[in-house]
Image 1 (tube, rainbow, N blue to C red):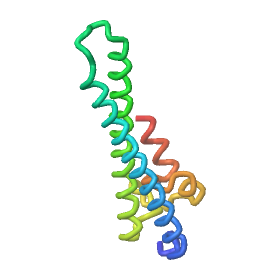
Image 2: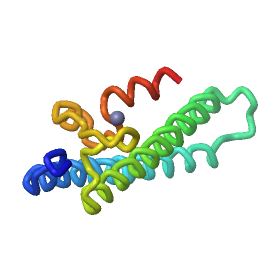
Image 3: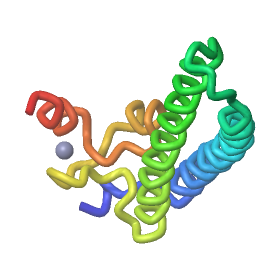
Length: 125
Ligand SMILES: [Zn+2]
């Protein structure tokens, strides 16, 4: 089974990729925070006029941004778990069947927990 383990160099490569993605996400999240703060100000400044044309726009922008924030938080969790797997040596091993995850799949989705076969099975359910 030892041959299913990724080399240290490969693990370090993916650690760097994952950390880069994580840094990008944190940056995105910070940007969304700024936008949310602006929307909050705009919303608080809204007049009581029910026909305020800005109303629905602010509401939809708010839900769009909070949706993005939730998605970023989800992805951060996934990346953190992947980084933990790099640390404990289980990175690159399918969490379901224990077989190695193909390199092409890891290159495309470094945070993947499942091999392509298990991922397909999981999607069917
Ligand atoms: Zn699998």
